[in-house]
Image 1 (cartoon, rainbow, N blue to C red):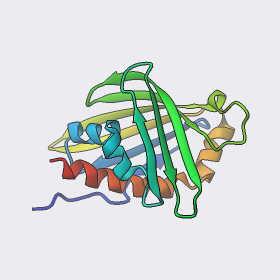
Image 2 (image 1 turned 90 degrees about the horizontal axis):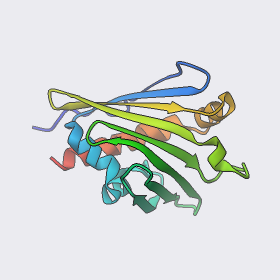
Image 3 (image 1 turned 90 degrees about the vertical axis):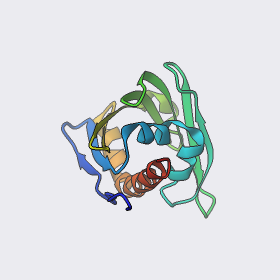
Amino acid sequence: MTAMTTSGSAKLTFPSDTQIVITREFAAPKHLVYRAVTEPELVKRWWNAKRGEVTVSEIDLRVGGKWRSVMVTPDGFEVAFHGEYREIVPNERIVSTEVYEGTPDPNPDDNATVNTVTLTEQAGRTTMNVVIDCPSPEVRDAIIESGMEEGMQDAYDLLEEVAISLN
């Protein structure tokens, strides 16, 4: 029997003018969702959101460790993000910074978001809660206006497929 997936079901809320909260259930246990978001070869399978090829997935999974992901779209446009891990509780919680490398800002790290990912499991299904703390309302609005929700829905659908495939 195939697990009932939750395609396109991530919910976004905006509790303040500097926060984005994403909540998404996955038809997989939390240790598999955690693997899918922390192992480079698995991240390469979902991070592209069906919009190109992930050419770089680097993860140094330790507090103070860095991460970087790069995707190239079919028309050659490169999309890259990087950050640093601040807190890691295996299979439960990851706090990291996130910086979009394509910003016109001369010091993009000054506008890093702090992302807190929390995984909870019930009856073999995992709820992922992502709190994105932005340094300003302008950064939050730029993220929302970038089309992130559509890409995120597609990426999370792929993430669910990857996590289920590990079972």
